[in-house]
Length: 522
Image (cartoon, rainbow, N blue to C red; front, side, top):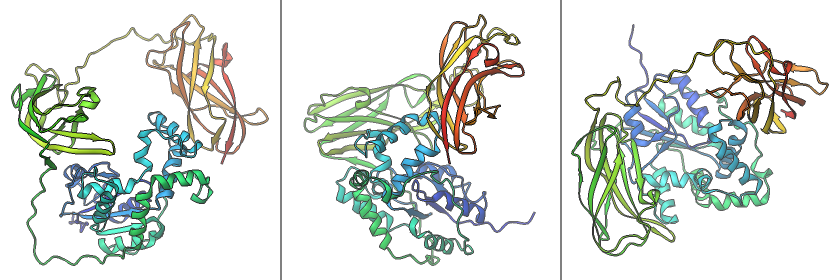
């Protein structure tokens, strides 16, 4: 087989959320091939390079930067901006209209409260997604993220100016042309839209109060975005006349006159067994009383991924701070880590009225090796402490009588065509026999759709399995059903019921289903 002339550069596409980056990745994959362009990957900057840099020429994903780590000089960096208010709206409504994952339920509810209150009701965990996302992302390339607003903005702008190609969503053809020139690709056709928010208002259609709230939350991003829009395009860099040696920057470290670390030792030694109890002993010298502090430990694996981290605030300890003097401190951990080599680092952060200040930060103060116990009885590198549980055989019984009732606990009155919704339900088994989810004829939740005239338009709805233990007689169980909305808009009735595969629908043998009116819209 002849050798392919595949693209062999090193490019990192720093995909900022909801800026049209998925369309860029799709186009690049079509031009350069899936063997050169990574699928969408999320993670820390250097960890992604170490993990995927040898597999792909172009890395694409949501990248995070740690404190003051800078750029990797072996890579070309590319990113794409979007008007911050428009980006926030796209992200907010993407959660509402495109996500039906139960794991995101809390986030979806928070977004709905935020929009319904015109931005007044905003839990803290929502803030990183909709407040100065750009500045908080880029400022950590040259800073540590704890500086005041003007310095964070300056650090972010300084970092953006070092990207090789920077574009804006509103001028997508220019960005695509600049990226094509960098990668020496042919002129790109109009890009196909990918991962688009299904339904959302335009910025001028939202209430004045919500718009004002989003502007307040994104003052720094608006300044950065206006500066980026005015930046001239960069010409592709000429080939270097000679190579320069590259030595990786050391990990972030800081020691002030206020706090110093003494020696750190692992009490059990540098070789420890997975699952054992270990103690990190360290000395900490404070020049003054520090009333509000966070003392933390962070453990990283062999490719610098954060394996574990905790600080005194999470542990609800050291609430009264520490006095001046020498303190001997131990972190005691139950070591649930896979086999491999790890490093432990420590940090002291002072909590101030207007933010936080790093007093001491050491990324790698001691190294240790994790091994398996000698009597380990399994294969692989991680002990999962497996047990085998064997239940009684499930009897293959056809249910002939199924008295019971299903009531919906949460159901939307409006659904979008063809979308999947998860509906919480309470199920009561009034029969004298259990309802099993396993066996050759499992019992499942399902549904029918009736149109406005009461005619059945969808009879055989999607199935939702019962919980693993099934449903015992005389028990009410709170569960859920996954429902696909009809493909055409209109007024419908959702009949939420149960059935046994290859046997019968339960409403025909004594079961009372839930009947829910639903308006389906395009």
